Image 1 (cartoon, rainbow, N blue to C red):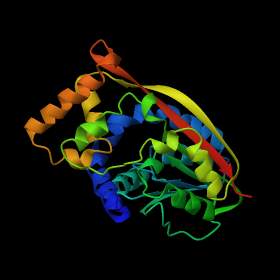
Image 2: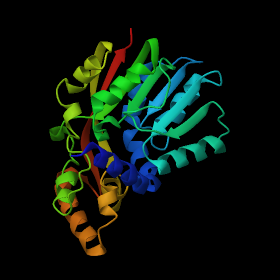
Image 3: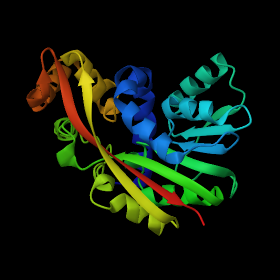
Image 4: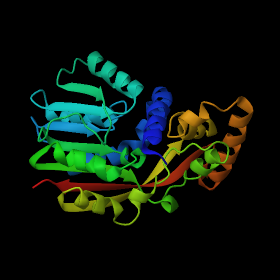
Length: 272
């Protein structure tokens, strides 16, 4: 896929998803974000970059750990995600937190600006994940550390049929290599190639809990990576893809809701 086209798809797709993102994903992503923050071992007064920050789910948790002497700078490719994050920061009077729209592969940030760089479940959508990780390395001070979380391999993610279901109706080109980074030691190799040392990873299994079929479909279609394609579907087509997706996750039904398996991979590296 043409990288420029993929970036446009991501930018405007996440603009569409922004209003639904926290409703459908905040609780589901919390385990990965909690473990990433534990591994990051943030210290009061540090400067932290959050790449692909979305609405700030991870950013605000990190900022609370830094105290008022620390700083948190969040970037995302989606204007709407950044608008929401800025609104929350203003509402909470967080003067040490700021957000800007920025491409993860081309951070408009000076070298050696941060102590820590984080990226929670964003690298899968970047055309060149190595370039994005190289950028994280570039903006870190010597002795700094970077951490990224991605989804595990396709076989470990029970919701994976969402991509072929949508692509069968419209070539969405959302993220053709979505599951690649979570396969084997791929993400560790990306970190090493980008210049990081002492690279290590953890894997953790999770369950995405949704109380109703409507919630499960909302997360998969309106609040997730296929939101741009989904926004163009008429009511008939939406009903059709909902039915097909629900059939794909039927093995994970629990009562009226669903407990859909997934896996997170969290990788850490040091800049020496």
